[in-house]
Amino acid sequence: MRDTRKGILIYDTANKGFDIRFGLEEYYGRLHCGECFEVQVKGKWVPVRIELNFPDKWYLVGLPHVDLNGLQVRI
Figure 1: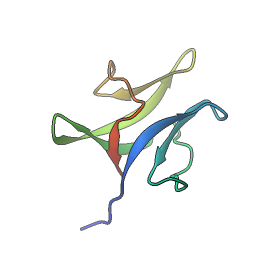
Figure 2: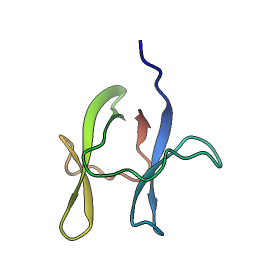
Figure 3: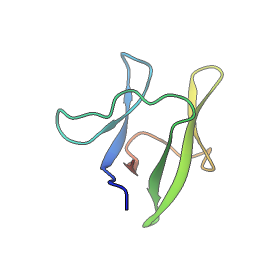
Figure 4: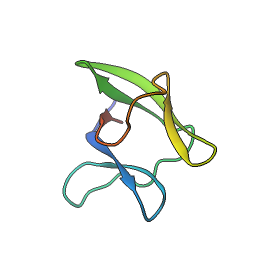
C-alpha cells in the first residue's frame, strides 16, 4: 500500500494557484494542471484531477462546480 498524506486545499494568491497545506508551515508545493489526488466528498474519497480553465478558473475534473478552497484531500 502506498503512503498517503491528508491535507487541505488552499489558494495561494502569490502564485495564483492551489496548494495543499498539511500543517501550519508544511505545504505540498504549488499544484499544476493535470495533477491527480483524492478529495473527500460526503465521507468518501473521490479521485480527481486539477485543471485550469481560461481565464484563471481552477476546477476538478469530475467535480467541476465544487468550491476547491478548504477541501480535504489526500495525495
